[in-house]
Length: 276
Image (cartoon, one colour):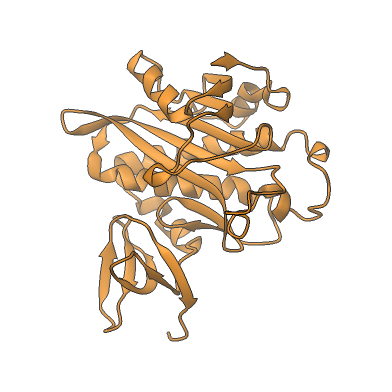
């Protein structure tokens, strides 16, 4: 593990301070690490303070939900983790992913203005149906409660070509911006702006959710829901997505018109529903 200057992020702490709040400070920039989430958890056990941020240029063992690898070419994306020292019941952990997803969505929407940026339950951010970012929230548990939460985020920023196996379902800020043919060198501060905006919004959204649930951000989450009106399945059941409730569950209308509630799991998209 080596620290690095990351020329476009060298003044990131000043960017974060300019937005106010205490999340994102102190910030540690890493050339390479196994996983920013693992680094954050190790540091948390050694006393790292609330709001600490770790940003890595490359990860050797980056991962998303269900153990999937998260790959980001050097200099093209943002991979980072934030430590939130906010004790809470374990059942609120999924709400943190949604709150962080909304924070990422808001940060990306400031620079992607031609297409809607949406939250795909439970932990992705999408543009045009393609994944642009993912969130992985992991708890540090003591006595049946989450004593702290590490929020890991991966955002595709400058990437213009993806591996063939994901090219049809992945996108990036660069590909979604107006005038996407402009090279990344034309936007040298893009990663810094997105990172500072994201951690600021995580501070606002996630800390509130820890204390009070989704309440205050629920309407914004509903407005940004990528699944509403789509046919979805989870491998054993399916139906039409009908929103996200205050407990962070996906509301699904089955073939009989009954509402069922999914707490977590893999969601696969089908065709758009033609009914009401």
